[in-house]
Amino acid sequence: MNYLTLNFTLELATVFKDSTVGLSPVPPAQLALAVILQAYTGVSDDEAFLLQLKWIEGDN
Image (cartoon, rainbow, N blue to C red):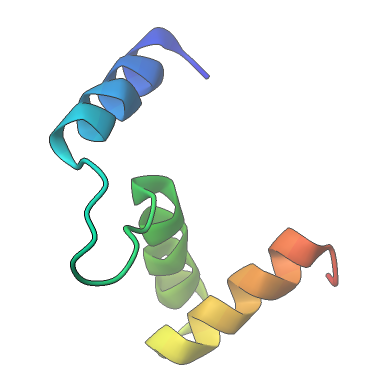
């Protein structure tokens, strides 16, 4: 991870603190991956989420 990415990630962590209200936050990198998957494969939000789960679990 380069300096700019690390710095940006740390900055986001201070802005978006833990809360007991609502859903757990999704890391920005995971959201970016979902958008890239959707653009590349032409799938829906749900399908991109399932593709990410398969990729994370190693079921390529």
